[in-house]
Amino acid sequence: MSETDRRTNLVAEQERLAARVDELETGNDASHSFDDNFADSAQVAAEQGENKSLASRLRRELDEVEAALSRLDDGSYGTCTECSAEISAPRLEAMPTASTCIDHA
Ligand SMILES: [Zn+2]
Picture 1 (cartoon, helix red, strand yellow):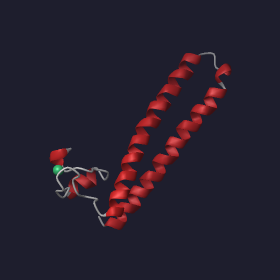
Picture 2 (cartoon, protein in one colour):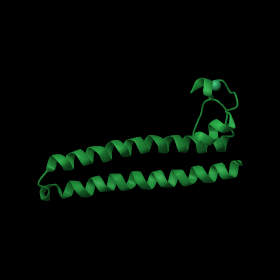
Picture 3 (cartoon, helix red, strand yellow):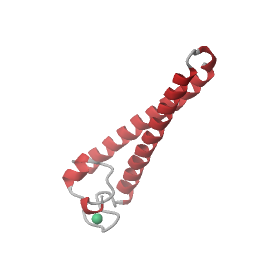
Picture 4 (cartoon, helix red, strand yellow):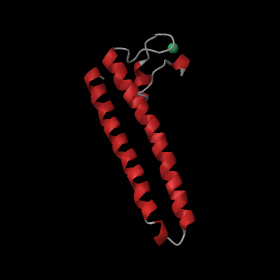
């Protein structure tokens, strides 16, 4: 995969994650204001908790995608941050945001 394709994929992933995080966080606010209309507020609280943990997980993924994009910018993409070895192509295919070689995973 060329570096241009890699960047295109990462940017698409960045946009997808950012939109999803935004949606989850906006959803939290909306359901919060309707709290009184729900008979089972425990269920609402549970759903909000799920959205919150999903949003924070997606935020971490987003951070990784953005870190990968900045490694593409500074030319260190595909190089292990621990030992400077080249990260294998199959590993990058499987995990485009990988910042370490398989030995340092
Ligand atoms: Zn390494």
